[in-house]
Image (cartoon, rainbow over all chains, first blue to last red; front, top):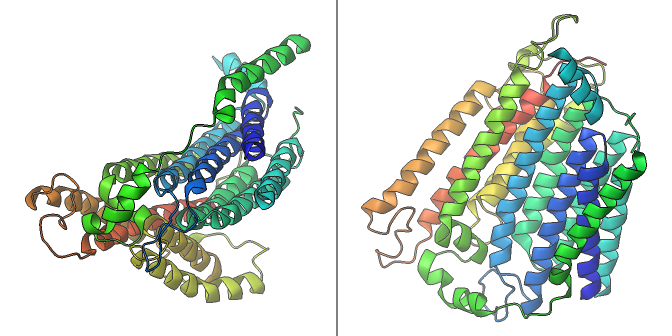
Length: 114
Length: 81
Length: 243
């Protein structure tokens, strides 16, 4: 049980290090997606330990999985893809304005124009 | 459980590959594969609603917008780490 | 200089690791009271068999309203950046970007295989999407899932066919999206008239156990999500070609 948590924690750290350390903007957005995936995995994994059946009320269901983390993670997945779409549109607009995807080059070229 | 550890380590390896690759299209395919493996893991963990959402959104909409962004900028990562 | 940046990055990652470590090492038991309460009362309170649908469309419908609002804002922002994407270039030729499908440029990679497979698979995917949307209260599925699958079906149709249809016309799709948001507002205010509060389910005041309100909300949310994502994807496909 603790090995799975450590693996998800490593995925979260790798996503965070991509946001901080990579110089390409698109790779930073990859890191954002990876962090989102890690959090969703952690919640669903922890919520499934207290039961053994899917949370649909049919006949013969006695011991179902916790349904509250699943309802919260539905919202989280949709909001994650919305944030990705808007940030990618902004990255493409930045590339058109300055001609490069490197963050240092972009700040230098934007400062030179003024 | 051994199957959870196996799928999670596959997801971790794909994540490291997505960040270290120089061709951005390979990284996008790796992100789509991470979504597929996550959907499989959610089905094993008895969460069918989340599995359908993750499969439709991660492998459908998210891949389309990433490929669109790469198409209008560069495909290779020229800047290094 | 590079060593200083590297050491700052490593320090940041270490501090984050130390801050999250109590979550990894804690062994507090997961609480079970919520699951027990929902097991007994979810069907009586909302009328749905799917407990997850009962939570995000019945008990916590305000969260769904907020999420629909986030979707609306982000897709509006993305579309406004998309449409103005070609207008700021000064030294390239005129960009062939347009939202009407009959003016989409014909690429050389559009082979017969893509056209036949996509246009034959499109209606099947649309049918599956409507099924998942309408049966969200008794089987896994619901508004969001069905909506995204309907959006994929519309993208298939836009990729495959040569002639224009009403389903891939972006003006028609955006009108459906605005109408669905209006109906969502009307459905949420209707709870006030049935004396069950804002976004309230009328099952509590009438004494029959029917899932009609949940089905109505599923259809409205599915149409909204589906058409807005389809408009964004069709606008992305008809973009300019450079490089």
